[in-house]
Image (cartoon, rainbow, N blue to C red; front, side, top):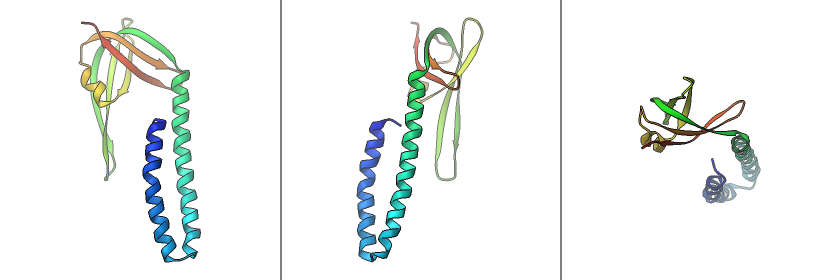
Length: 140
């Protein structure tokens, strides 16, 4: 998640916390201690997610960028989730001139713009652990 999204999330949660503080304060002082613990727990969770996001961003910046000719081999959606939410991850497989293949997770917009069988220039980043899709520019 980008830092802008984190700021928007944080700004959106402040009124909720203020509302909860008002309710807790109207109930009694003894509950304020519980609110403090609750705030600390949510703060720790927020910081943990921010650190994970920053770590992924650093890995992407350090990854080596490659641009190669490739053909779109296949596209496949994968639906997942739990009983309350579901989501779709789109995977696109590319084949290179040396017959090697790489599969990338892409968002719905990128998936809709790329067609099976297209040939073009694939730009991606790769480090030891991760493979990041950057762009695919088909030849016309």
